[in-house]
Amino acid sequence: MSNAMTLPSTLSPSSAKAAPAGALALAQSSSQFQMLPGQLGNIDAYIQAVNRIPMLTAAEEREYATDYRVHNNLDAARHLVLSHLRLVVSIARNYLGYGLPHADLIQEGNIGLMKAVKRFDPEQNVRLVSYAMHWIKAEIHEYILRNWRTVKVATTKAQRKLFFNLRSHKQGLQSFTPEEVNDLAQELNVKREEVVEMETRLAGGDIALEGQVDDGEESFAPIAYLADSHNEPTAVLAARQRDRLHSDGIASALESLDARSRRIIEARWLNVADDGSGGSTLHELADEFGVSAERIRQIEASAMKKMRGALAEYT
Image: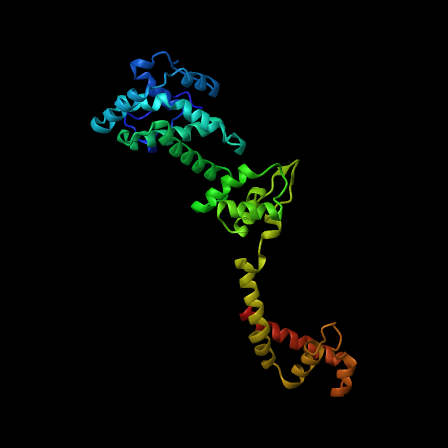
């Protein structure tokens, strides 16, 4: 929690990110709450300080709310906010199980409280504590969904409702039984498939794409098996070049040979079975053309050299 307790002079929740420390800055400018310490270095001191702020009576609350709504009196708004900071602390304590800092939960709740004060209508005959609870919880919920995981687990309104309800219903680390899934789906008025999907999201965790380097060795990580080398640009270009070489290149190189040389190359290298067998031997071709096996080898070497020259433009 920051020691720099500053807050804008206007009651603007969007610029009130210094809370909860910022909420106490409101007290410094209000003569009624001069008993608060000027600097608070930890969350316990903050909670003790806000619990010492007097509660407002219904008449006082209505008077301040009317003054702020009609005359835009920011001092009246400060009284309303300060007197309900303990409510934010109480609500934020219920969300500690999500593993997020208590101070951050209170900070977000304070922003929700300021939004509630800004929109509160005293003519509705409803106490601010009842009206503000919705805004405080909504702001805390939004913060949890943004920061609980790197990847959001809930984006729609229905998914958010399901997220927080499943967390409250789940006991321990065991998965829901089929009967529990059906009961929850009926209770929350959602499809059982949605309950199963959200439970799967909650059970998962964030995994770093790249592994950590420990003792000079990089740990095994998804980057090792998720990479798709088939679509890697250089691999794609190399594959296209091989395809062009096998089709157009070989055909063009064979056309540059005389009939005898072409027959020898085809018999020796192109009429080969998949298992590597089937190519004619030098002696078989020597008998076919009535020359020595050495002569066939010389013709083959000369033809291969000529073909490499013809394939140069393809490589």
